[in-house]
Image 1 (cartoon, helix red, strand yellow):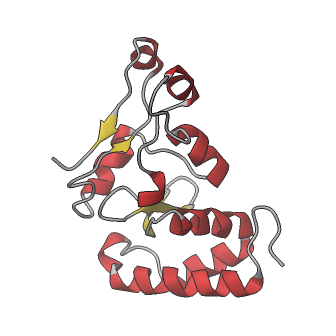
Image 2 (image 1 turned 135 degrees about the vertical axis):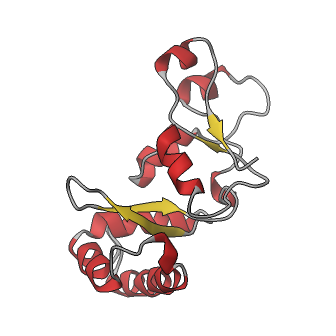
Length: 161
């Protein structure tokens, strides 16, 4: 049975097979970690597996992109070539969403990320992701924006161009 922020055993196994296939196909993204370690950690953290499923559900392709040196935490990023279809046409944050009068998107990137249990990348993280492949060649993705920029009504995005 699926509970809030937790997948059923069947759904967990199905997702793990998808993640393993992607992991093995793109081994260049994560040469310092093996699938057994990744799989064991995901099984011990069902809420993380749920978040990865949310990324998949919205058209993403989450994959391991590294290991946090200080903590040993496994880092996942969305490695879909373009911004996932289920996460496009969003405002940056709630303030931007509420200020829209016409053609209002359904959600904001920050709110959606929070609901999915994931984080929007910083500029440095996005630049690091781009060293692993050519992502966002025809789309763009919101990245964390400094408060000074938000106060002036702007927001930052990243793309490959």
